[in-house]
Amino acid sequence: MPLPSLLTQHIVRRPQRIALLQHIVEQGSITRAAKSAGMSYKAAWDAIDELNNLAASPLVERAVGGKGGGGARLSEEGLRVLQLYQRLQVLQAQVLEAAEHASDLDLLGRMMLRTSARNQLHGRIGQVVAMGRNDRIELDLGAGLFLDAQITHESTLALELAAGSEVFALIKAGWIELLHSVDQAPEGYNLFKGRVEQVLDEEEGPAELRLRLVNGQTLCALVEPSRLQGLKEGDEAVVGFAPTFVLIATPV
Figure 1 (cartoon, one colour):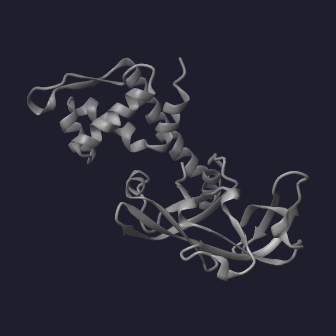
Figure 2 (cartoon, rainbow, N blue to C red):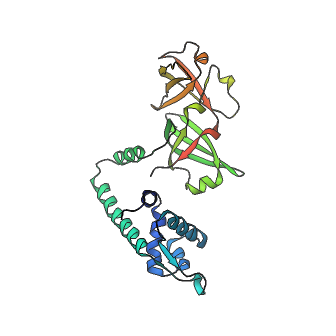
């Protein structure tokens, strides 16, 4: 029976959690497996609960209580998942060996990202600044362009974000505002100047404005026709959006 798609995706995206299964096989207990995997006891339990919830039947069977936190072993399905993970490791090594350029692998990773957001800007985190319960993520998009995102500190930890991490900034087209003057922008807005690549007028609803940035990336904004004010292909324009409108995604 094929593995559920969500579980298969989890194997690819969170290999450290699947590796915990191997430690359970070797150690025979959650406590010792967590220590061997370099995880906290709570993190190990969270990982096991998440894996068990994704699977058709529990991957880990455990006996709660007792000295050392009780025993644990993999179920039949858990053993199959572990075998699949081990095969994926072999395939990964073969792919890395076959790739002629690292950029080819980077491109494949970007192409595997699926989202409803029209704008997907690839960049590298410059710094993560704590702001109480939230964090400000500064993203370097290249060619001197920077973008700020505001996300919860919990999200920063869950995505394992740190300076140097490669991420995607996702912004819905409807969240981007066409500005006729930089002075129109509220304080803290992300501002981007570029050249209009295309304006698609709709008979009903907002027009679609595509703006080419200096780093070669494109921003798409939905603009009410009355705000275009004759803007056409080749013109320069400025758009802006709040850091809270930016979603952060990490490659698979």
